[in-house]
Image (tube, rainbow, N blue to C red; front, side, top):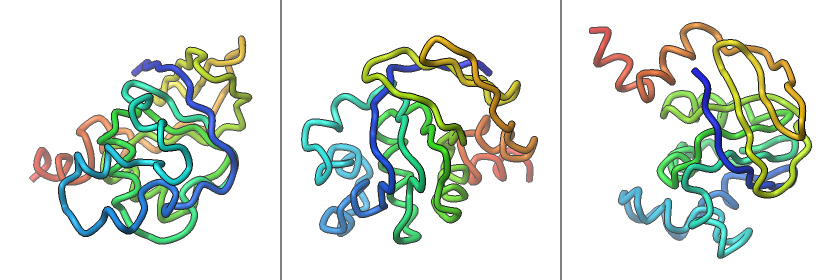
Length: 156
């Protein structure tokens, strides 16, 4: 499955509190989370995320185990997050809610078109195609279903 989006460049060590501040977690309204995603990092970032691919530095999603961080990113319309490494719990939460993550150290230029194929295992950006480790077949099925809940609904 080939997908693409415009890059939004972020640095390393983006923790879950920067993704969605705790003050917004008093509501279960996911549209509020999407509206305020990354607000403490850059208040103007959320509107630029629809259809985007986040390209970040190492250790993306560190911090707490709250799945609301991955949900807020997905609800904001992000197509995928690319980083050299992810916090383990964030990685699993993202796959479980249907947010594709790609482990790759990709140079980033803001607004550049990024293309990727999770099944074939590659990312295109910065004028080159970079091979990436493909996700397991089960993870690919979960993503294709839209997340773990939808996957289990289809496989009862």
